[in-house]
Length: 211
Image (cartoon, rainbow, N blue to C red; front, side):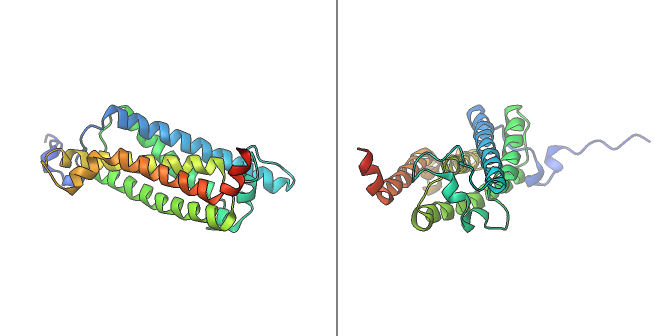
């Protein structure tokens, strides 16, 4: 008796079907941003280990009184779940890097996978905003490597969201969602600008001494 033929795409649940091809620029950015975020998270973890081994150790990202990873690493906010926050980054960005490799190789992942990735990045973005608030208004110092992670997380959220919504939105002629999609990078630039302005305002007493 011959083997049953493999199920065709039309017989599969919608969420199990391969998604639309990811644009090359989006695929490459998922890979590049994931790699940058992973490198920053690994560097932070190494610096934290060195600081634990030697309390007198000066992290490589201690640039001045404001830009100082060491001041941030010793705070409770740096280990919210009982272990260094960068370990979360290592796990999360590793997933992103693998996804980027598959996307660059033109492997069509199912829609549910991209949605799950977007949800994970959204949770990461919420955590990033909490860390931004803590850094600015509670700790009073900025971690340069952490800021790299912030930037990569937000840009990844924009790109992965565009991957999810692009096929559906391209079929619509108008609507709020379409406008948001078209202006997504402008919104991201406004976000980065807002964070920079908050940093400048919060530490203006120090920045003004450098002028």
